Amino acid sequence: MSARRAPQNGAARCTVSSTTVRSDSGPVSAMPPVSNRTHKLLLFDRMGASTTPWLPVGFMRRTAYAGVESGHMTLTERIGVDTGQGLSIAEAVEWAAGNDVHYVDVCLDSTPIDPDGYDDDEVTSIRETCTNHDISLGLHTLSAVNVAETSAHVDDAVDAYLRAYVDIGDLVGADRVIVHGGYHFTDDYEARVAASKARLTRAIEYAADAEPDLLLENHNVEPDASEMHYVPVTLDEVTGYFDDLEADGLGWAFNPPHARQFPEDIDGYFEALGPDLCAEVRLNDNHGDVEEHLAPGEGDLDFDAMFQLIEGSGYDGHYMLAFGTLEDMLEGREYLLDRYSGMAGV
Image 1: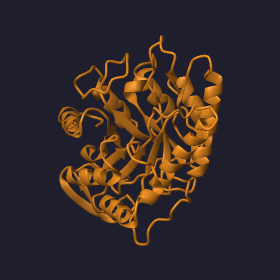
Image 2: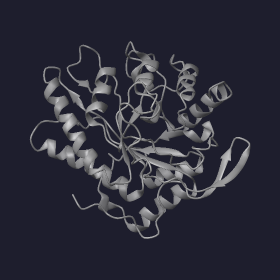
Image 3: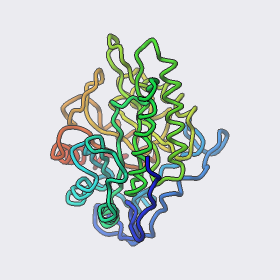
Image 4: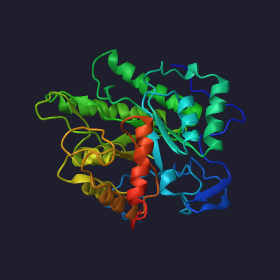
């Protein structure tokens, strides 16, 4: 693994610069840029002022878009698109710029995942596109890569994989890298979870001075008959991970469709962990029993109740669509906006 490369001279980060903030009714005002590293502060302690029922020390969700703190960011601007492995980073941010998408996540696993594969011109172009179009970039690791790996040689490769994601995120100015806990094979649960937490701890330490935060996603449950099971999935597992891994640069990628597979449901997960830890809310529809990535309206997830819960908590971060094609997600965004954007709490 090559050493982390410094940002290019004069290259802009993938965040908003001083710019005019938009609202649904048009331009509002020019605002100074919001620092991307202000989240690296110890804001809460166990007996502090946070009203969240449970919250690990230290994480503060960054506000990559200048309008967030003053409430000028519209729901349209806060709903992003996960392009998966279909587009390169450069292609994804160009696509986002052309479709009024301000948050975009990219999976790099169809590429060599090599920081040295990005030349200076490409890095500068990515950063400038993000800044000029107010785009916040995220990188989403592949859940098929087992972060709970314990086998010799392969375990080192998983560490290198996570470091490469951090290095590339640091290079191109990504705000976040979404990570997972991996999976176990039933009878090796304790060893796998221990390996998972140890590996994520190493990744957190490696990313401490890098641009992106790491966001841990609550995973989906597999059928009982399956030998393989993801972690963390239950509410106890998720809170246990954050309790053990607490760090300034570790936040939560909340997946409501996954949460509704459990008795606590969406409201139980969100009320337990709260909006302060949450740095992304992933959106797709399902029927609450198995893993599905359906367009809104194709399942039975109550998006109205979900938005009321999350928006009513004061959450002002972004949402991330993850289903179907890029066109499906743009249509899904409009479906959600047409049906829910005028309701109280949204």
